[in-house]
Image (cartoon, rainbow, N blue to C red):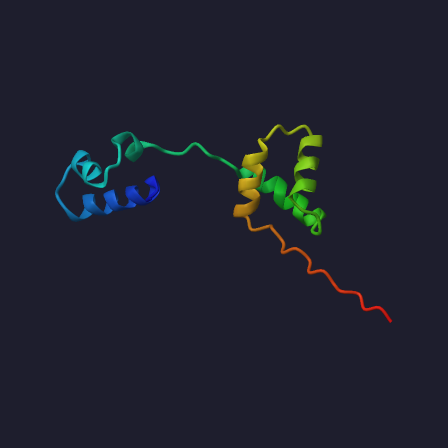
Length: 104
């Protein structure tokens, strides 16, 4: 399954390479024209800034701690939104490997 963003790139290529209308190029790629003209309204700069600030203050903590602190500060951001931004920033740290304690 191809995402609309990838289809948009192909339509952009077709428009630049051939003398065809937007309607025709979108039809070839099975992309609705409304999706061609759609512009995302996402602006996550506030979330990114807040997560960076928390990551500098508490580098050993994880997402749950950051999200709890964000909510306590009165910011009403959706958990899924904050998690998406957190993952895109690659703040996830690998889980610490368990150490086997040797008994003597």
